[in-house]
Amino acid sequence: MLDELLEKIGGLTLVQAAELVKKMEDKFGISAAAPVAVAAAGAAPAAAAAEDEKTEFDVIFDSFSGDKKVDAIKKVREITNLPLMDAKKLVEEGKGTLKEGAGKEEAEKIKKELEALGAKITIK
Image 1: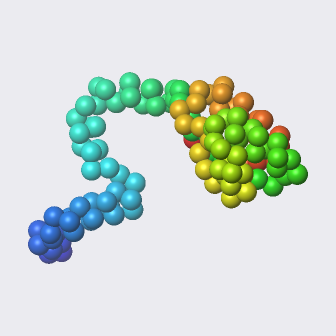
Image 2 (image 1 turned 90 degrees about the horizontal axis):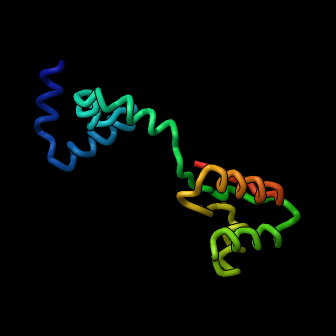
Image 3 (image 1 turned 120 degrees about the vertical axis):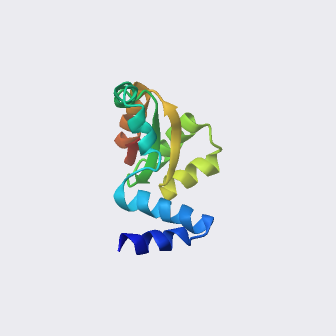
């Protein structure tokens, strides 16, 4: 069975092989770069510690369902420097990035202010 599978994989085009790798990564939650990470095991703990201490966050506007729409639009304009129509569209459609690379305190402040107005905010 394994020999048959290897034969089939060997017959794939380069594009098909790349798609296969991508699908395997998605399905099994792995990365083709994983063996390289294992070889550099000494650096892995340092990288994991740095990842745990994330310093930059993206503030995502998910939805709005409040009665303070005008205030929400003003706050979005203040945060993003978007023109009025773009800020209004973002609040009405409820999907978009408000701020990229914000510090933790700034991201939390933005979230708190907009959620008080009726917005749903995600910090990533």
